[in-house]
Image 1 (tube, rainbow, N blue to C red):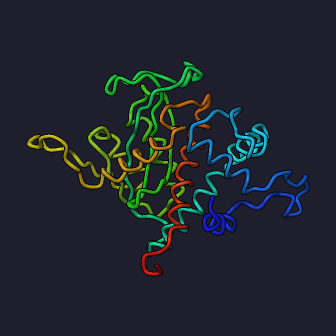
Image 2: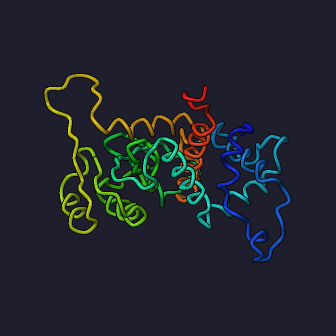
Image 3: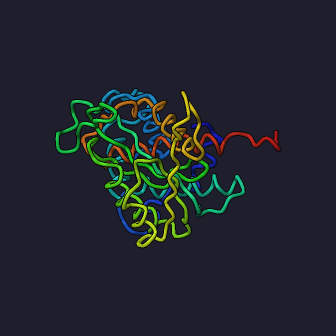
Length: 263
């Protein structure tokens, strides 16, 4: 991280328990060094044991990564950054509209058969990332499943999680794969309007569809993060956390970028 990024990140970090008087030992390494190591791994796609000597030992970095994953601290940190980005752009902290979609990616050999499958539509053997983003393209919720999991089945669970976390969410755009009983379920159970954005039959070639391009842009960013070009995680929870770390990279760079009016 640059100094400008660290100035943005530091006030938003979760406070360790030993600083709150809850006991425990202080960390042996600076949080900035640990965060830099995790960001380096996610952005460049290296193995944990291939961590450069400039960073703390790989096992200490992984222990930090695992602790933040198991205690949901990554999501807490990510949500604080998202709220800050929305405020910087003059938006309300809580979104009122979003977009849902999924992406199938190939899985590495370390991914077990219990969490991998074959997507017959995309011809991909691996996992599927189901995401909900706001109208700015910022992540609201993510769920990683086997690639043979249907979009509607995953959306039942993911949309419930997102609706519980964001009570002001009223409208969600989706593609034709989310039609059927899911529309009525969102309206009656979750109080959400699921609007289907379909591609008309008279369209030829590549056409940018309204609202759906927002989530496609997110997938393009994830694929630029080399750790996410293929699924290398043994656990689906680790795969979800890697997506959060990728979005943290994006948001910290946005916040540290000089504002056009101040330049």
